[in-house]
Length: 186
Image 1 (cartoon, helix red, strand yellow):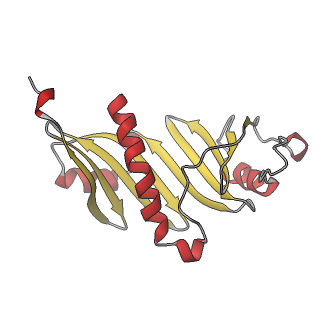
Image 2 (cartoon, one colour):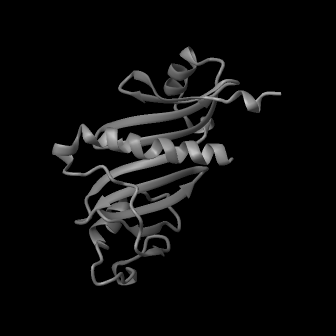
Image 3 (cartoon, helix red, strand yellow):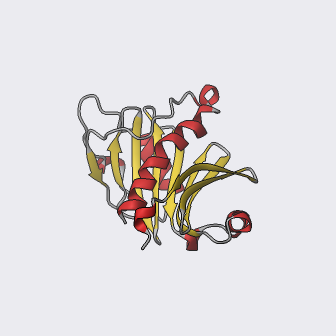
C-alpha cells in the first residue's frame, strides 16, 4: 500500500507538468495542480447558489465552477471543494473511481484526473499495455483529461521492476521505471 501511494505521488506531478506543458500557451495554465488548499468544504448534492460556502476574502470560489460541476458531474455526491493557488479543485468518489476536477480562478474548467484500478481501465488501453507488458500486473491507473486530450498513466509491476506506462493518442511509452532491490527477494 505504501509503495502504491509512493508511486502515485511520484508519477503524478511530473506527468501533469509534462501533459499540460504542451498546451500551456493555449490553456494559459502553469501545470501546477498539486497545490495546497487553503480551505475545504463539502457541498451537499446539487447545492443552490444560496448554499455556496463562504471562503476567505481572497477566495476564488466561483458559482460558475460549481454550476459547471453540477451540470457535468450529475453522478457526484458530496463533492469536497478546496481552493488551490490557481483556482479550485472538486473531488468526489463514484463506483471506486476518484475524480478530481480543476478550475481556474474564473471558474473555467482546466482538467479532470480520474484514479482507479484495472477493472475500470478501458479495454483498448488495457490491451495496448498488456500486448507489450503481458507478464506485469496493473496496480493503478490515472486518467488525465485536458481539453480534448486524454492521457493514461498505468502503473505496473513484475517480480523485478515497477513501471509507469503513459498512453496517449494510441502511442505508448515507458514514463518511469524502477528496478526492485535484491533485498526484497528471499
